[in-house]
Amino acid sequence: MSLQGKTLFISGGSRGIGLAIALRAARDGANITIAAKTAEPHPKLPGTIYTAAEEIERAGGRALPVVCDIRDEEQVGKAVAATAEKFGGIDICVNNASAIQLTGTLETDMKRYDLMQQINARGTFLVSKTCIPHLKSAANPHILNLSPPLDMKAKWFRNHVAYTMAKFGMSMCTLGMSAEFARDGIAVNSLWPLTTIDTAAVRNLLGGESVAAQSRSPEIMADAAHAVFCRPARETTGNFFIDEEVLRAEGVTDFSRYALAEGALISDFFVPDEVFERTSTEVKRVF
Image 1: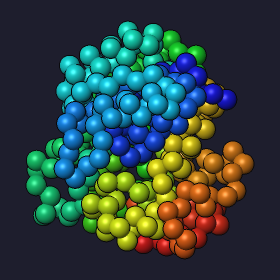
Image 2: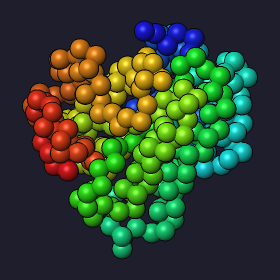
Image 3: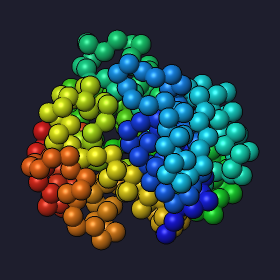
Image 4: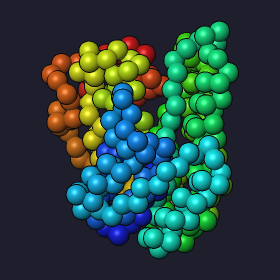
């Protein structure tokens, strides 16, 4: 299966997992809108929407970089309209943009609380809502939220309740919209990594180089997302996918190419206990 000619609208996407998903689709010849805020280089974060667009086109895709704050309804509406006008529609919506702060209740200021809720939960709702009228006309429409399984255990909340609420808000969009739009044939799923992924967030917030070295590259999430997009939408909805399990179902057995170094990998947040019981991968369960 190929995404040739398909149009993806990706929130965020100037770096990390969002960019990896874009580049994987670009290799098929897809059209990709990168809707993100980073128009100018950031001193601590690589990439802008324009450098991402250049990479997409070098990889074989067509790119539309759009400066877009997904907290702003008008900006999202204009970005989605520009995508549909340039490429003739929208086939896939990827809710990749996310804000993170791993602090307890007393250490979380309300400005940061609001930012996480506005980008993660509200942003996912808004971007999906705005893309859905176009997805209804697509041949195999997908919404993919980069959010975790709804594993409602206290251990996922006790150390950073505000962040967990915001990420689970994205996953609740998956749960609700998959049922709401099932008759329209729109697949709505979540995708989450088994292990930590080498991104700016991991390097800046979870331990820097030492944790990054025990992580996988963003390409594993990109390959898993591609596999989901190529599945029939009417038969593939309401799932909380784990990257490795998606690829194992596709016949992949060797995951060494995604590892940045030899040795045990570190588990990501929010991975349910039963997932580890199903996998033979050597992972340190530190969360």
